[in-house]
Image 1: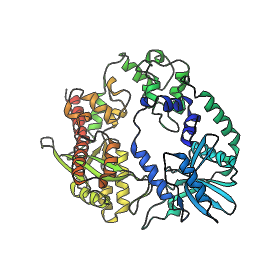
Image 2 (image 1 turned 180 degrees about the vertical axis):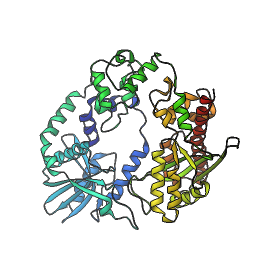
Image 3 (image 1 turned 135 degrees about the vertical axis):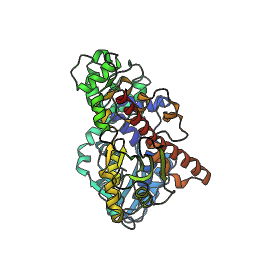
Image 4 (image 1 turned 45 degrees about the vertical axis):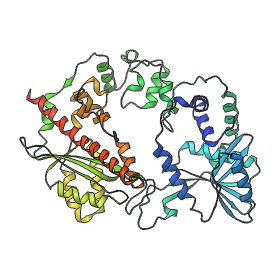
Length: 489
């Protein structure tokens, strides 16, 4: 078959994955577009790291890209070419950045990650295989990644934002393996779907978009539904034929996993440890401030003080209960589009939350990290922000410890499982009923691209963001009330 570097990497990860993408692409689950957009953005910026370059424009006619590359290579002297395209024996690749220095060449593969993943070595080794067989003298192979330690101050410094990792020796060692892999891939790409067992490659290096298809005939619930268990451990049980909960019931495993199985098989009833719940609730003192942040991440930092993939807060919701009989109050903040949201958010937050109060979050380590970062960024607000941080309590604790647990929680203490387990018939608390934004990653992506939308679209997205974030803190209030009801009975 005609292989590209992405198809080659699919094939060596899992032959069935490549077969499905070739012959049954309709069974593929949706992949987040934001992942591809990030990769494109990083790739475009990285084209500048070595200075001037000739860009080979993308064309669905790959022959045209190959011809354009040949013309570019006719230029005398040292040269940088981006998306330089080659074909050898039905194996095609486009090199992110090809450098010709003197009589030798250098391959640069750009990734939006902050580390070198083993699959990247396969990717660049495949490119070397093609170019070397076409007679190009390649002396160096680099994987270009983002530097997680880089913090932007002023203009972007490309030499510090990107890390150039020399992997030439690893690439050379892989060449015989590449040739055999190509033979294996071609021999297995028949009309018959390959029989491939589920294994760790279903989640590593990436979540496979065909996993749902490959597990469609398994009895549910099954080993892959156990919350928190390492995927490789799940695969070990699977290979032994221990798949359904009934088959797993008497196997040796972490007690929490065994509990999930027993609950979902109906062997245990709802667990409510009233003493422990009361002990937790006694750590909370009025006035109560229920806080939730929304953040987004950028591969390429837009503002000072940000590093690649740093969590940048742009929104919060705050519900306040001043005393037992006081009405519930709500406060919120959502930054304008296309600006650094942190300063205005931090200023509003210290107005909305006074010092020395009890602030409640669900999985407070996230909120604490956001507050710590804001405090280090703004010394004039630091004392107040750190005071809020010190006064935080985690509503997740009773559920993480399984002091309150039922089978509908499916082994998880995430609020997205706990809330419907406690309030199964309340449409007001159902995230699926929300307009536009239904989960955290949707909120992050919506805000990150908000400045690119029309004014009308921005208004709709902002409404969706506000309603979503408000439900996060309202859900916490309802959960807290539920715990209160338990100890009053």
